[in-house]
Image (cartoon, rainbow, N blue to C red; front, side, top):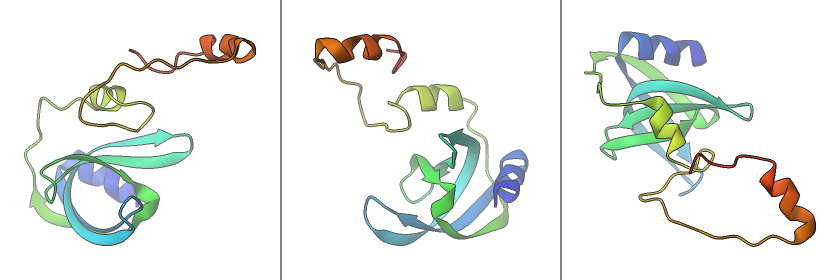
Length: 121
């Protein structure tokens, strides 16, 4: 599946898939324009333009139950940047707008928190 998705990205081929959405607990059929494969903590994710949602979405490859590469090509959005798209969220979670938050940690945990960069912002 990863090889097929990689080929679809290179050839700018549309992909039909049957996908399980864990958020909604349903299986749906989608046609997507694949842009980028990304490995995060051992799991592979596909960043693709979802024609059903008319927006870029993140799909966990392991939840793709069935897929077919379609003959139809898509026009690559030259403004799309996988790095920017991934970087706009926290880890791989993204929402509509960034929000400022403050989190208080106990003194014995605060040093651990300071040692890591959790997000570019």
